[in-house]
Length: 461
Image 1 (cartoon, rainbow, N blue to C red):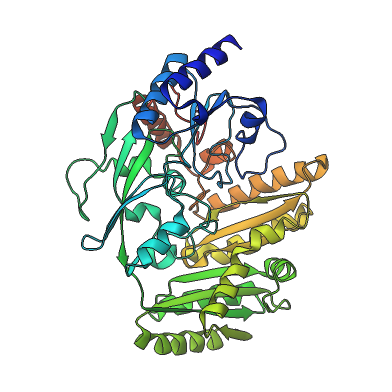
Image 2 (cartoon, rainbow, N blue to C red):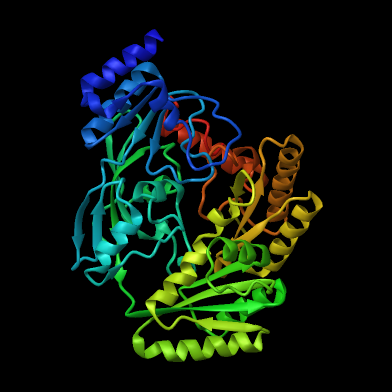
């Protein structure tokens, strides 16, 4: 208690006192993120809202003084326990560092603080005819800093890539308080090591990103969405391959299985066909003059691939209705039981059918419901499993099923995360897909960057 009081006192001397929270209720509110956990194991010692780079540096120096963790937090929307508190420490909240510093139309770049909300940022750049493609399903609340920490993706990853493909420079506060600049405001950079790639996806374990320079691209002139239904998962997966083989490159190719379709339609009635085993959500974009051609080719491929029904958006309202339904899958699944877990596994696309059917078989064997969605254009699947954490037997079955899903993913040449990250929830399983030599080098990098182990410790491995 004495140490905590001294910590709070030091923090209030370095920052405005109203930005330092220390009551039990305040600390409890920031002890967890969007991860469904059975109980809160530990509370932070303090919650700090930072507004400047200098304040971040001050907090890091104080954390070193007391040898306590610093856990960065954007909107707390991650689902892998990446900003869950495990051993006390300081929650570093970036919601007040939320400025778009610059959007440069000529350079097609933007400079932003980490607390900028992703969806708001996209709207601002689109006003200038520019485009920032990464679009995780929680983009209306998730932040740029969080998406960098977790290397977020989203539905448009198939055509446009993920967050890592749009980072050209980062300003990072290191574990000792120093400032590191990883790149420059240039689209290309072959000058020395690509240090920026170390921080993207590092979950705040190597340094604290306080500013990011992002690459932008021209905004597509037009877009529409096609929803195709299939009587079998096999037909849906084969249709994905057929589209790609015809050299048509949709912005997205997303997937919903029968349970997801049924659950979403009950939660958010959107006219989904609930008697089908699977559906593909395909977005096309580009010049207006190309849209009719793309639609004709893709619908033809879908018909030849066994699609039993095809719906096409004809205006923005229909477009948004389909995407709202797809993005509602997690919320819809949460209606089924007191808790819901979501996962993020990815395999080479040639093994996608085996992954989807294998997950379904595992969950049936352990008597668990599962709703599957995913970005099948790149082989990514999100099994969403509703459970009751207070049911000890059901929880035990879920843990066994989860381990088997990871085993299956590894057997199919996949990895445990394509866009959610590892956090605390998957660290016990990372050895299934990353060999011991690679893990040893990751630990060595961590020790070099953070010798006192204060930056989000005990995450990833």
